[in-house]
Each structure stands twice: as structure tokens, then as C-alpha cells.
Image 1 (spheres, rainbow, N blue to C red):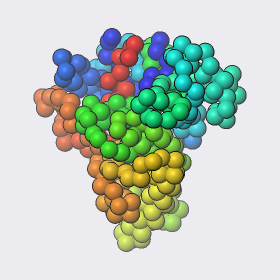
Image 2 (cartoon, rainbow, N blue to C red):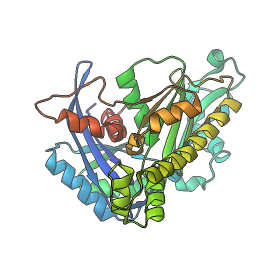
Image 3 (cartoon, helix red, strand yellow):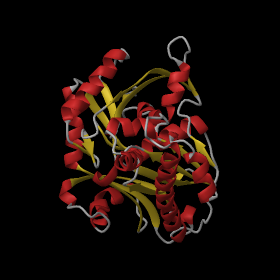
Length: 352
């Protein structure tokens, strides 16, 4: 769901807390081809709790990727996430789309913890009474802070590009999943684990039923290692990724990783429990994970064991053609988990 559309494939730009990712695709018939993908790290204080603290660092990162990857294009799809966005499935009386458009602001005021004048609103009807069997219809409501949207647009403008679409990152992930995994029946969870936060999107028979953002991610592992071994942040980050350093006990590191993973999985379990309490459906059939933190050693099998649900690392290039003469396939596959949102954004077109 695009929040605001200002067709033609767009350049997908995902601004994360650890790095900026940029993707560009080409569509030929029903086939998507990867034209370019690049990632540029940013310093840990550039983005804090979803707020951009150093716009210059973000602009430089985007410019570096555009130059290195020779990315051409003037229009961009980018994403919002975390505390600046609210996504809720709400029940409303049955009405046509025109009536809903007129009344959605009043409906939204009941569910959004922000001043209604401070947000932009988008909505989509996902279930009508004749389909759901309920007396009311279900609407997916999205509200994003205007301040955050302006901030993103200003950064893209500084790069010399135009913001065509701003989307919720969890929907970008869903776009990417649907292209690569086609029709998946039952209930699945798409979980993107970034540096500072984690998004959970529970999809029931193709329809998003619950989206949650939780403040836990890769930095929790790094911070714990840094604190326990009195390391610099950069060294702690390397240890998290498997590098062995003098005076750093690998067994102690493994225990830290396991403890943070346990905290992370407990948060996922609470979200699953909340979903089950508000749905007639009890079962999560499968989990697909993405994000840089998804590569933490042993995390995928640990999640599967604790949650008792099959877990698979999501491949954003599964059904997308990747030319070996253009890309280093091994390097691209290593970056694949953190490429999912940018790829989902690059799938968007103006007017979708």
C-alpha cells in the first residue's frame, strides 16, 4: 500500500539504522530483472529510534550508491516504519468507497494516538461482510506523521531525485515476498530484523492482519557484547558477526547471542499470542525472516525451535533474474536478507 503517490518502475531506497540500501529493477513481460543493488553503511548515530539525526550522512550514502551502481532514474519509492507510523485493521460500518473516504478521518481518530492534524492517512478495504460473514467490514488503516514524510522527501530532494511513493516498510517486504514466493495459502509471518527494531507482518490468506514494530534488533547484540567485553562498538559488531578477537571468549559470546535471541523470540511470541487472541485462526504456518540481524549465527533454527513454526530466510531474488556477468552472485546473496525492503520498493510503480 503506497501512502502517498506523487507506470514506470521506481528506484527503491531503504533507509535503515545500520545502512542505506538502493535497488532498481526492470520489468520485461512478467519477468523482473535486477538492474542494480547497492548498500552503504552509516554511522550508529545517524538514525536513532527511527529518527534521522544526520541527514547529511544519509544523503552521502545514497549519492555514493547511485554513483557506484550507475543507477539512472529520477523517481523514488521509499519507506516509513516504527513509531512514526500506525497500521491497524479496524472494523467500520459497511459503506461504499466514496463514503469511506469521507468518514475515514473520523474513524481514524478513534484508533490513532497522534493528533489527527499531524498525520496523513491512507486506507484499504480488505474484507466486506459478504466475504467475512461479519456485520461490519474490515479496513486497513495507515497513518504516518507528516513530519517524517517531509523529512524523507527533503533527503531525497537533496540527492536530486523526486519522491513518488512513500510506503510502510512492512508492505514493501510483503510486495517482495509476493513476487518471489507467489501464492502462499494459510497464515505466514514476515519478520524483518534490523539494527534497532523488528517489524512483524502476519498475513492471513494474502491479507495483512497484524503489523507490529518492536524496539529490538542487531544493536542489542552489539551493545551487550560491547558492554561485557569493554570493546569499541566497531569491534563488538565484528564479534557479533563471528570474528574472533583476543581476550574475547567465544563461549561467552555464544551465551550473549543466545540470551538476546531469547528476548527477541519472546517478543515475537507475544505478538503471535496477541494475533491469536484477536483472530479465529490459531496457527502460524510459516515464518520468513529478513534484515541484517537475521544472519546472526543460529538465529533461524533457534526461532523455529522456540516458536514451533518452520522458519526460512527470505530470498528477495528468488524469482528475480540476476545476471552473473553484472553481479557478484556470492556477494549479492550475502546481502540478500537486508535487500528485501529495497527490492520491494523497487517493485512499485506510480499509480499502483
